[in-house]
Image 1 (spheres, rainbow, N blue to C red):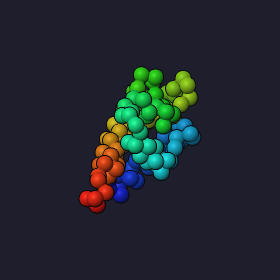
Image 2 (cartoon, one colour):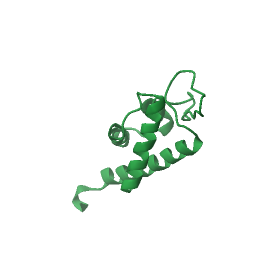
Image 3 (tube, rainbow, N blue to C red):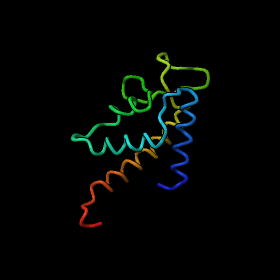
Image 4 (spheres, rainbow, N blue to C red):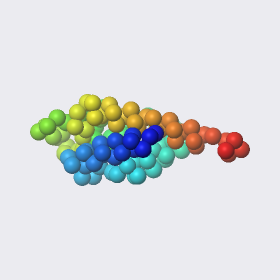
Length: 109
């Protein structure tokens, strides 16, 4: 990831925090991401993303809230579909980078 992408995902999380103050900072999210990669079993994104961000529709799809429409459970949310998609794009890229780094044999470092 580029420094600009780190800033962008941090900005998205800050924006989400304006609607739901329990949204974690990027540093926490990155530690969570590493834990997901290191887990004994593969954990699908549908299982953990709602828990991490405090969002979701209960069906594994992160909730999108448009201006003025809050979720019934008062959970956090993305501002729109484009923001959600961009977050997931950067998230998936970072997940792949962490997975590669943690799977690299130490002899090759």
